[in-house]
Image 1 (tube, one colour):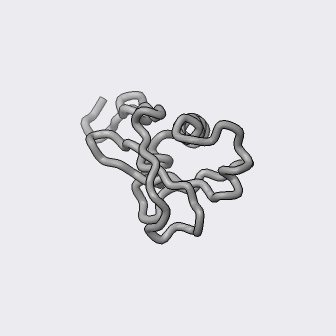
Image 2: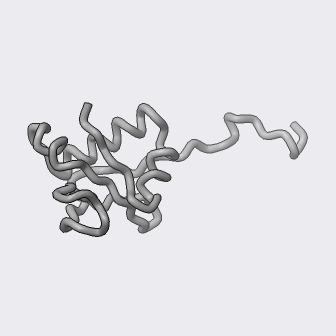
Amino acid sequence: MPASMVAVADIPAVAAPSWSALTIERLPPGDGLPALAQAFAVPLGDGATGLAWVGFGDAMSVGGFGRAWVGAALGDLAAMRGAEPVLSALAAPGGLRIEVS
């Protein structure tokens, strides 16, 4: 295969980090998020962290809401949309809002 052609299988997929309750840190309110938003610092890999947040109403509608729930929700999003878009959203200004549907 010429050097200018790369098979898709040769490009490694971006893997999501392990998001467990032990790797997610709950943050205090503020930092430009909506009032009462529940915010979390989540690992992006290589020592970097991103921001995930949940609106107060959504958080109150979830049984067992907390760091473990956020980790599971991020894992579900990465499985549905791919790890790269989720990691990009977490790293973006304002972070990633997790909505309960």
